[in-house]
Image (cartoon, rainbow, N blue to C red):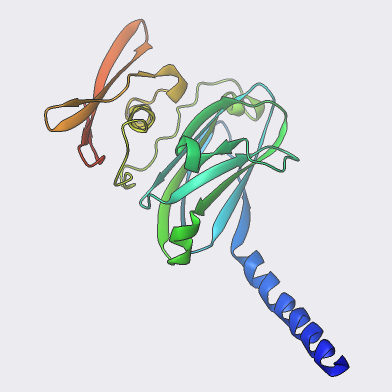
Length: 227
């Protein structure tokens, strides 16, 4: 019995020494720094299987932070975790791949990009653009100057399927990128069916004028156009 017990313990120790480094290698951390005089950046990335990337970004309380993930895999999302927190303050798989919020406390926030477990088990790959924008970030490192919000690459593939509750948020993200307007300054209505398509209508005010636009989606939930 003593020989068997030692063998089992040795096997467990060896397994732990092999598995732990492999698991650690599947998550990497990158520190995000904006170029001098800018308030945002767009990061191109790729993950496969159970890989994930933790983007660390330092922000101050009271700033507005925008995060948007454009990905070619509908099972790819991001979470946001505040400094010292054990639970995410934003869960992309529940709330969608775009958010804007007022930073509650100063420190380093983690934006974690990942694949859902079912997709990770199948070894799927996600190519993505992660856009990060922090209001007034440019003022901390350069003389005050308005900095345009970075626009995600037009080559990013839209999710293949969206339900009607997700369409307004996605439409706001497309309009933000197309018109250079912050998502929180855009008003978007609920989606409704028009003929053989869905449409959601939105607007924003700039320079004393109101701009109206429509986002069109197929009945399968695929994004078609913005006009």
